[in-house]
Image (cartoon, rainbow, N blue to C red; front, side):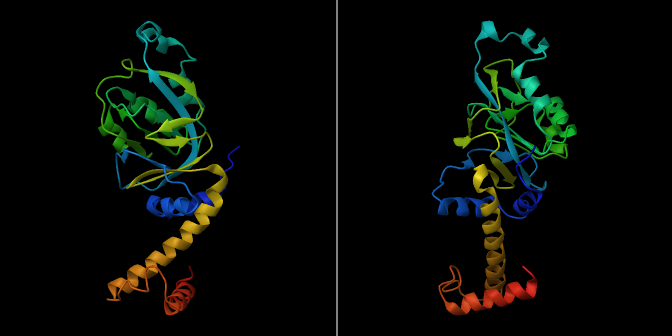
Length: 239
């Protein structure tokens, strides 16, 4: 059963990865943004879900012939069928996009099973087709070769590194137009609450800047008048 509450999930869908990174930085976390990955379609809704992982290693040819895909227990195929609905499928492809982490058929299967999204620090084949799917997807660049070369799927739902970020199974993955961030599972609720508050303040600041106000004393709120004005704004906006 998912440990991510519906309330926390909904809150995280309303905040940016940039804001989440600031909240994480305040707690000493500096390496939670997955480096190098971008959304195939930046206009899709924010992706939120618990991490379900797949780890690739460099392929050894005698252990990774095309016939391995006939095995129903093949790690890549099994992971696609085991990834829980609402989770985010996170792939450690060793930051190597020369061979594909998956193609449109496997990603479509994840979508049809109710998975919340997929991210790899490698690449996808059939990237244009994947971009058209309703499910959010993130990669480094398209990969024309199949994953029969260079990569060999090995472990399912183990701690991995994805784009230099540590990912433990069950960590909360959030992806938007800027990229993908990993929230340690035990911090998800408090990070969500703080990010919602930060977003409200930044929206208030944006309004004031658009009205012509200086950022000095406003951002950050070093003047008491700013804090009073924000409290009144928040009450009026019901935020």
